Amino acid sequence: MVSLDLVRKAARLLSGRRDAVALTGAGISVESGIPAFRGAQGLWEKYDPGEYATLHAFMRSPRKVWSMLSELLSACEGATPNGAHLGLAALERMGILRSIITQNVDGLHQAAGSRRVIEYHGNMDALVCVSCWKRFPARDRCAEGGVPVCECGQILKPDVVLFGEPIPWLAQEQAEEEAGSCGVLLVIGTSAEVSPACNIPVLSREAGAAVVEINPEPTHLTRTVTDIHIPGPASEIVRILVSELSRAVLPLSETGPRD
Ligand code: APR
Image 1 (cartoon, rainbow, N blue to C red):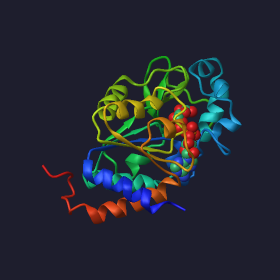
Image 2: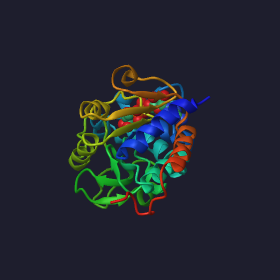
Image 3: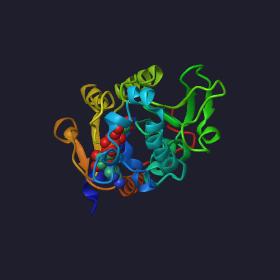
Image 4: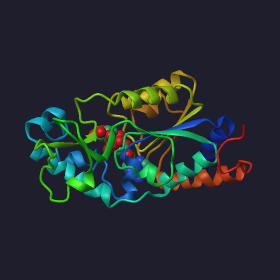
């Protein structure tokens, strides 16, 4: 049962400060049918990330890594935004949420209508050649299964950040700028186990932001940087948050915040 008091406390913070940023993880897409990585049904319960999700493993045995990637790709292809993705897009239109930093590669925030999305770990929708760097939409080259190859004959890799790869430079810069200047950081559906994404809430807190965590489970953030932890599923909590804020916020033009 979601605590209405905690949601209302978070809503008061958001309507008071009005320059919130969201950091999202796999948990926000679980209700869209995409498995999370950790926890009971997590992808890493089935595939050891050390063998299936590092750049070294990909270059050494691309076919093996593609067997995991194609499972993730088909889950993403069949998924549609849930109430949490749609609610965050509504908060952006209301001028309350400024941007989203997502660790997810499923494109569901953009599909829900969010415009300012920083893809911290890339996106499954694009493939890039490891040799000539030519890019292709995933749907064009993954149909036949197996390891997709470039016109030059070399293997194609999804444009996602595997373990051992750096975060795309621009995404890192934008995320640090947004996290370091927001009034509230909403942390939704992440175990906060993976660096450097897990340092973003610390950066926000040190810059004076309030941190609101939405997750059925506590994480190590809960005891260290979180101001309000709202236990429960993201779609229900974000839906209630939007409804509370819709009552509290004066009607704004659809284009965004008042000048
Ligand atoms: N609503 C909100 N949170 C949820 C829900 C839900 N319905 N269901 C699960 N969660 C929470 C879990 O409690 C967990 O804390 O979502 C979190 C998912 O954690 P992970 O699976 O570790 O996903 P994430 O934090 O995004 O992983 C970070 O690790 O493997 C890498 O690159 C991968 O981007 C990924 C990164």
